[in-house]
Length: 231
Ligand code: GTP
Ligand code: MG
Image 1: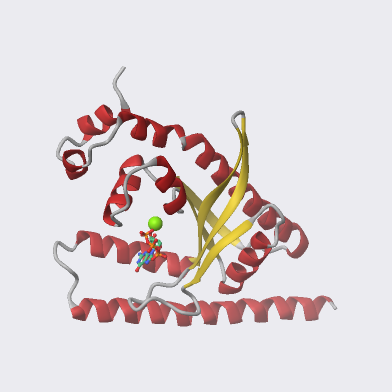
Image 2 (image 1 turned 135 degrees about the vertical axis):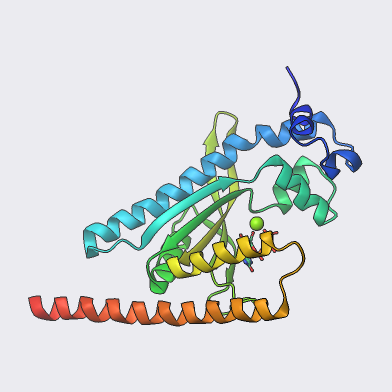
């Protein structure tokens, strides 16, 4: 039976982390052993969001959620993030400092769905809000838009209950399209993208934001016409 550290070393023998971080096997094993609790937290929050979506479907014949994705950060990415921030690799630091080990991306149809979903999630009594980053009202310099929140949710396992952080990124289909392609473009670029490309990416983000507003308006007008017609 090989240790997790040996497994990582086998998969990526050149990884710089393995060369300069003197990791105890216990630490790696500890990170891996945390997976069930973070997976539990992902399920708790996904179910809450799913329930809100279904309720909206039955009450208003409208699904705010287009689709959801979730992931657990790999031990390697956790170690890289601690390393990048010059934080010593310990279980305590990982639990306290890395708040996006459990991550959910919620892709909504319209911008107003984002704020409604966030509001209803935060209002639930077992949810503790850690922080909000509203990159929709205040987009990043590069044009990135999304609503981020970190919440803590209680997870009950055989070892007891723990409040576990989950990062929830909520965005429209258009914001998601931009973020996915921008990420790919930056990842593909061997050097930094050119200032010209930066400008064009920002312009695309602004056009998509304008489109989001327009689609929202069109949708609302259609709903109103339906309501007026059936009144
Ligand atoms: P991380 O170390 O990446 O977790 O960033 P952070 O803790 O400083 O938080 P931030 O709110 O800046 O970003 C969290 C996540 O949002 C990232 O991991 C990405 O998934 C997404 N994100 C933030 N900024 C951008 C961006 O400019 N482009 C894209 N494509 N995604 C972004
Ligand atoms: Mg992250």
